[in-house]
Length: 413
Image 1 (cartoon, rainbow, N blue to C red):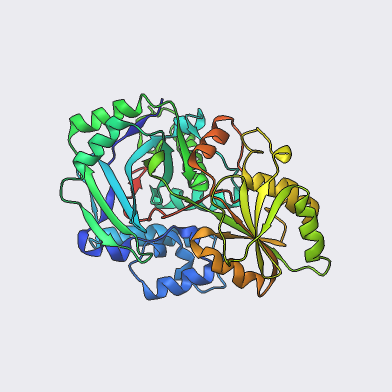
Image 2: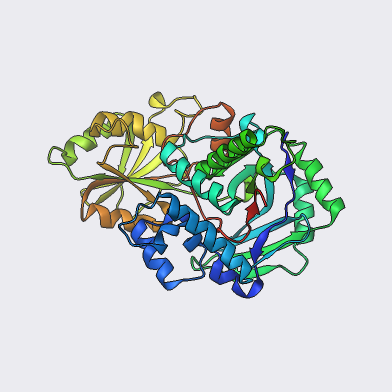
């Protein structure tokens, strides 16, 4: 059962909130991070990506870079850009984007739940990415980027959250990505205990986004446990910062594919190969998006096609039944020779937030073909995680992203 606990957050003072809160560190390239932090000196990205405080020839993974992140955090706290909560609380984190609202509960989740697979995963992590955040968390003694968790809808939890949202929010602002961000505090001990008990009845929670941050937090916890062999389990390093969202409020966007031009690709042979595994309908209108599972759209030779997977080629396995798995298995591997989409440079992935215009632009420049996918559902994600399997690469695109720097969990004083 899911174990959660309240925590004393280090959080921005109200007048600086919109200037400090930042998109996750990994949505920026190195050059983008340098450019952004130059124009936004209070942005948490300065702390999340401390290499931006040095010349570009400095190794971004060197010890002094991580130490600079820790120094900046301490300095901003000393200068009162941040305030430390005096009591352990839960926080309600609401985001509204494109007229859709999702409301999560910011908590500390148990490292042991992660290790015991109560917190379920669906993605394999890369050790180099883990190491970067391990060093960052270890040096800063804090977790600043929350793990995005999902759970099956629960009416009693929803009622508590809805009631708490009737109060005046701590924060209420529109971030640069045009998302309305609002946050409330729950400090009443009886309400906190009720939420702890209610989540204690939920068998599993699921990582929606943030596998590397979660794995890094757990790795740091293991290091601290070795450092303090007589730990009791109540220490803050036994928990990691997360926001829990009910599955029925989450919005997963499509994660589309484009295939880069190669001299041996021929549009006619590609189309003939696809007709063997899909029913193909040429569209008279432009920019057609798939409207249900088992279908996807293809842009080839400046023509849009709607593809319907033939039933005889579909699978019942939780992973193989996914549309992204069908595309990889029946089209990308046999027709384009792409066996490993994680490493093959001939394929690129385009988040649905960029729209179908982005696919048309790519096909008109450096790509031969584009596939627009129907979004993977959160319940497909649950099924894969429950089966202890992994999703294919780039299966889900969650929007909006959780901001970093709004809530910071110190793992050791």
